[in-house]
Length: 186
Image (cartoon, rainbow, N blue to C red; front, top):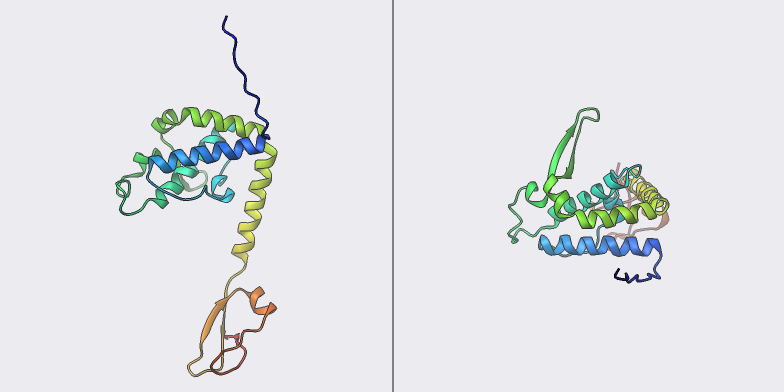
């Protein structure tokens, strides 16, 4: 019997998750000729159901591939390829009246090693991932709840600037030409 070599990893489960995600994203980037940082947590964990880590890992990879499709340069050979070439299929869910992107069977086979590793990382980090999903949801709802307002100066015609209400409330913006404070355009 041959002895097995076991390497002890001093990194935390969360650090291993981050490394796993980064490695998968690097592979996706290489395959589809894209460059860019790992997508934000809100994108990675969108529509992820953590009740089943196998399905969760597939959805995370699906989110990565969807992001990759959007980042492909128009000068890349991948630019004109259909979603199926990326390993994606759209599925209609009548109960939700929604169409969602899912991994095609051949993509599940192609990425099986990465999906297995990712599934293990999801299992080990359920609490942290739930917290990251909650934070992403809260951040998204806060940014969506603030609609921009239009402020104008007294110039003729007035100069206009769009800003968030918080910015308008917290500072004075003065027009350099007429010297008046920008006010809400009614």
